[in-house]
Length: 372
Figure 1: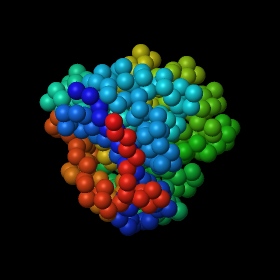
Figure 2 (figure 1 turned 90 degrees about the horizontal axis):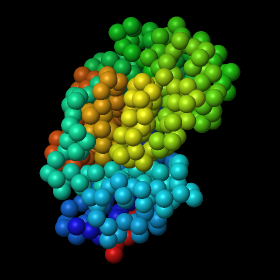
Figure 3 (figure 1 turned 45 degrees about the vertical axis):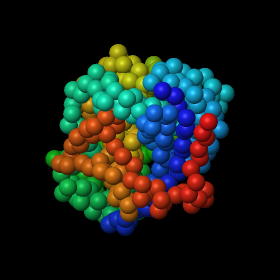
Figure 4 (figure 1 turned 90 degrees about the vertical axis):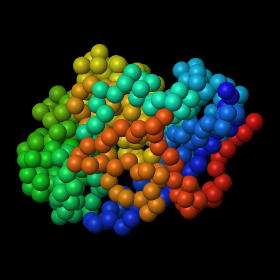
């Protein structure tokens, strides 16, 4: 079996109108589908992280990764991952190139599952948690009243864990008052503060009893500063969604910068690298709560890997509903839990209608593709 084609297809599927509305809705509509095609007709599906510069990620796949992979045996995943890592070394240890590698590597695992007739979680040793706890990851809202409204809505859908994306104490207080003590609250602030500001905010937020405080320090790689915050508050600190590779997470652990690690399977290098990070976390006795603010093959891959890990940490589940489903059978949460997709590989199919209707507008309908 040989690889004969690699595609990166940028999409922009809009979300349905939300109540309350969020300015974030437009930014999270972008997706990148990756397809790895073989001379046997089998196709592997992946998803690359897309929110910042989707065309840049697609360009890396088409111009750099595809030429490395054409003609290769797709079942040699570890060797091909090493080839991609080494081949993009000058510019690829973080950011767009690592997003590209991740999407292709996920597609290779989906393809291997289809070759073997087995789900990815079985290839990784089997699921210890076939039904996974998930938390609703909310958008950012303009006012404490809107935050409270959103929290009541998602708690009413059966979620017992909610993650906010606010940067003010009043909104977090409103959320706590809206859902009471029976719902856990997390707060992802997306790296806004100096360590000193983050310490002050962490202490001000302690009465809200957060399950974790996520990425409070700018820049995100200031692990010494983040460690100072972790030592200064009783609230657990979570971090890692903006880090890549096993070595980046070693830096977080060595600095004592996080109580909870959050690798993102579409950013760290894919499934294989995620598993190495999980082993590193286990050796450091730190839990993993996967970042997964996406709804396609990336979320499916996250569920397959998380199902093989021990512990009770939840998986992120993004809120919002697309105008046209990304997948033929969308991945849904029920009562705060999700099932691992069944079937060979990742167990998901891309909705071809979505591909036709919502190509990324600045590129048009044509995918980035390289065939031999």
